[in-house]
Length: 220
Length: 220
Image 1 (cartoon, chains in turn yellow, blue):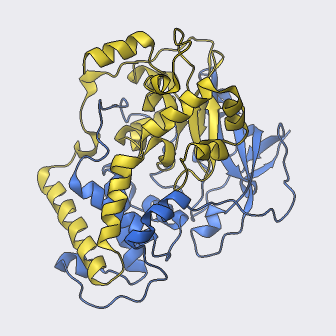
Image 2 (cartoon, chains in turn cyan, blue):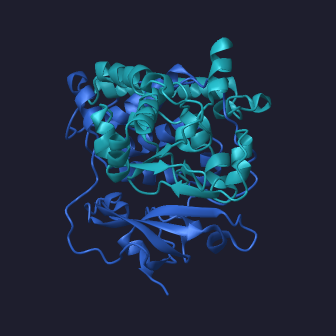
Image 3 (cartoon, chains in turn cyan, blue):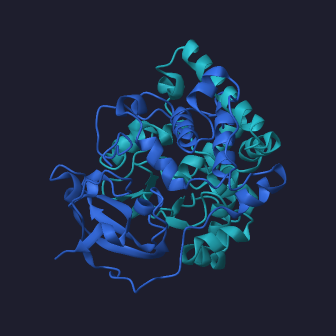
């Protein structure tokens, strides 16, 4: 899967000048210090929250779930029967992942996840959502023109493949299990996990091919 | 409510712009906004559904032109002001001007790991048997409530089929408004793209939503 570089920029500050961001920065700082001063929050707790989502919880977790599902048929069966319990076997659980559902991509059906109403996203397995996932272009369009959105990600699927878009309007959180690339027979779980991109677990991408992975590793 | 958050099916927002090697946070203040929001949720003074209601109550023009963390921050400020914890005058002054009422709880550093790992499960015991079964044809009710709801506009009045009976979950329409949890059965409902968007829709498109029982009525 390739991303289009020509659209590379930071959506979040697209329309905001520096003075605006300086104001936000000041406001957050003021809010934090007032809350601490009033004894309502613990500053040490804030640092731990940031550290957790910056270093401990991210799409590597989800990649391990996918690699296990590709390697272990019994785990795969448990994952589709009760995803929350199966994912917890790997130690991933908690906030914004209390009620997990795994969606299997096949040649006949490609699954994509969105939250049109806010930014619901399976934090324990994918971390915090990327800016584009929370943005109006994605949330508005993927339910009506998913193939157009996939083209924004450089993905083209056969015209006959069913595209199923899951709008996360309740407390269920969806994890897409991408198709296992061919040419990976006998690969270890750890090696398979390297093929699993974040976007492939949202449905806006596919798992990398062995050639794609080799190219990526050669260029980094 | 019919706020700017209900984006599904809107056009003209432009392409989705994935960012290569996107960092978890784009600025220091985003880290603090996330952490302060989660720490304040830990006060136990309002529900996650109330958070969503405060975000979607923001003026639509403002909502559509600000980043997601700014939306979180504005909603947090409104929640804190509404409950008398921090006033706008204090944020402007950059310091506390009066003591806050006591909060129900405080998220302290020692508890962060356990609280994040536990999350807040939203499933509840069944108050009654489920009204619908897998395969049943259902219509999403035509409704335009002024309060918080999780039934997106694009599905209202449309006919689909029960894909899955998910269990009984806290009902956001009540839980956002200090009316208790009022748990109801929640279903994944699938709609053919053409039943949502008309004849021009991608014939391979299926969209699902997660809908509580009060959102649905039997259809032929």
